[in-house]
Length: 279
Ligand SMILES: [Zn+2]
Image 1 (cartoon, rainbow, N blue to C red):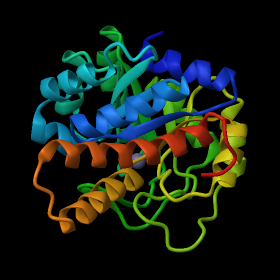
Image 2: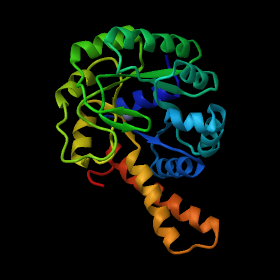
Image 3: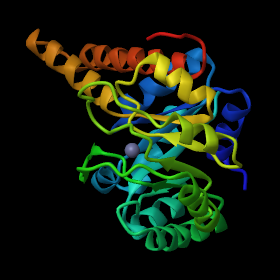
């Protein structure tokens, strides 16, 4: 099945680069990410958490992203990140999102497969792609908290990919959501083995890894890298700085915040697309 999401990932995999999947939460963050990708001439995935969709509504997020990606001259896919609600996943499919990630990784394997497959069949019938997760990626992803990480195993991951019919797979490889305390030990071997398979490997918890670690994960076959924490922290950090300067007009304020998000996304996209080996 070919749609914008899978096409972007297939092109990246072919070129041995990765696409940045940037978590956005309003028009400003979406536009900043699109402009960063456009200026580098690379494709992009914009994604939101389930909580963000519940807050704004699937239609409004779709419209925000559609406005942000119009006339960008690159491919921009809209994707739902970590969704545990079948209903919400199907709603995004019905609203025209390019892809949805169903995350039933906290359930036993058989249940993870069955529940992911249900949405995969629904999504594929409407031309929407689907990402699944196996193992448990630790840290905090909005309302989803995984205290202890369960690393994914190769055979189980491939069984999951085949039976759940996902278009992309996020295996737990030792990356985490949020802020790293120390240097994470990553399962490069699993990424390498999965990278040779006929699937698309997604790396979650991309905020805070070294450019070197990213380079290695991408060379081994990781073709989608999620960044969320670094985007949110930059957004909030710049707002705090600007607010302390007692601004009196919204447009210069928003422009400065957008510029900060643009810069941080751009520095990551440069590394993901092989244009730079450091941030
Ligand atoms: Zn994630």
